[in-house]
Length: 333
Picture 1 (cartoon, rainbow, N blue to C red):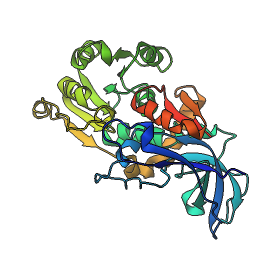
Picture 2: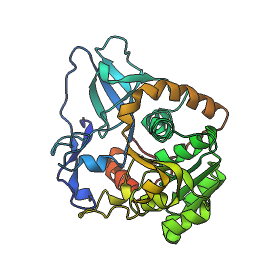
Picture 3: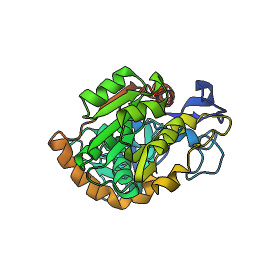
Picture 4: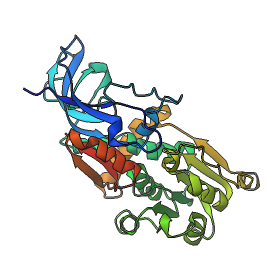
């Protein structure tokens, strides 16, 4: 009998990660202790932030250890339980992805209802992804009715939720950037964006100015780099920028130059605020309630990109870094 498999970090990537930086190995059997559950993972998340955890550089999250399984969001079914309140057959959300089977403390899982939404939704629109979008817009950027909103990486997991939630909360105009015409069409035709552009078609500052000739009030940043500089250049008086990610620089081997136009923040009295979703868990209940209503009436939809099998998990992760996903990138196990 083959033991469950897991993906380990074999070496710390320099620049772009390659498959050689990872190893797929069989895991050793683990007996359950009191308070633990055994979970057969069904779906796991691969996310841009994981690239940072592959480095030893000091950050907000502990680096992945070499020679050990990585981790991240996953949903699976409980096959054995020694935890009170968690039964065999329950579906649970937890943080030990990158493996086919996980042994988790009962305190570290949340039972989810897969009759209400598929397991994958709890890793995306109903999970950390959706809460990131909501917290960034409402608390960090202070979205107000009538605001003009620009979001980069708009066809990705977080960005696609940002645009739809901004419209639901009364934004007067929502603009998105993406990396292909197919994604631009998705934003316009499926997600209700008012304008969208392919950032490969020209200078981002010019494309944004064309899409928002009167400027923007809120920028939700998933990309950094030239997108951030363009947003600063288009800020209106009192404009707010919420920095969620900077995928354009995650694989750089040298420091990227910062925006050259930060003096505009003085003129506009604008602000730039970085944030982590972990600082805003208190909004989870509020978001879940509102998201359920938006999903029910069709205001909020989500698309997912799937890869099948743990042996394709690394490919899926590298695909996220290359922007190959539409919506949330997930691995079915």
